[in-house]
Length: 104
Image (cartoon, rainbow, N blue to C red):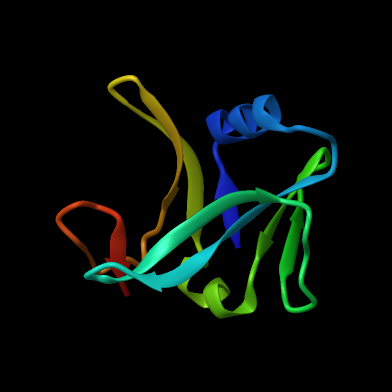
């Protein structure tokens, strides 16, 4: 469903507060293009989540987002002095000018 680059795995492992932590990846309605990505650390799993186990951490994807982020890659991007985890999604058809929201 979602691939992780080596850089993303390393970044997540460095930022874990404890083993077994969950990275939630999904979408929420927002912005001028329609949807905004959610990438957040959590300890909560919902019944409808798809869980992808990476050993010391897991990725949780909610059922409403799964079709729209299928085939995406989680990577680490450095822009200037900022390093962020970013979802690279081949299903995006458009994004807003500020780059925060996307369309499918």
